[in-house]
Image (cartoon, rainbow, N blue to C red):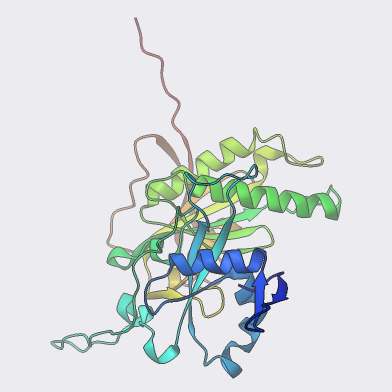
Length: 325
């Protein structure tokens, strides 16, 4: 870990002894690691990632999520237990090719897929994982529910309030992802827009509906903002071509038409809507949104950048009917 330290010179050996926050964090991270594993904090990796290709041999980067640095049972400080987002680095020549293992291989008919080799480590030996890691990203069956969340531009408020709202909404979204079982996965975030992945479409729909309902009651949003129309949420379920860790962030990176389709479904939403897009002409049955969801057909649309037409459905929570006595 790269950070502030103090140093003294040992009277007998003449060696420099380092103390301080950076040393404590580095020791805590070392205790999380397995033999042969290289871990660092996301802050340290951001500081040196620009040199990765030229000086570091372009290592494989994997996001390990946010972890507690100390044992909660032994923590004596008055403040909350410190935590850090951890990144794993693997030398390129030793890295496991997730992209090939998860759909990226070209296999001829009748042939056995080539075996993918490389270093894969167990979960970190931390005192608690607070957010999802790359290993939590959905991939089973090469199918995923891809969700894009677009935030209202909030043009009626100051730039300062807009930035603060983006930080508030980011924490809001991440907390809602962790409430699901299994948790939803955050692939990337860019100035108020999120690309998310879920193991099932009903979990993606539940996330979107719960998010809209909760943010409407959030007292922390600054300025004159209509909280009922803050988000446009687009969802698409289907196969991806391959997935693996992003070369810089280490977050799960998905490839295939599913990504652009989900983004276009979100772009056509009205503010406050949660929409699902289903390609026309597919032999598959439309995905089941779950028993607690009402679905309204909005029509068939030709979305920008997509060669096939998409049937668009709007989702809302089913109103519970009171039982008769």
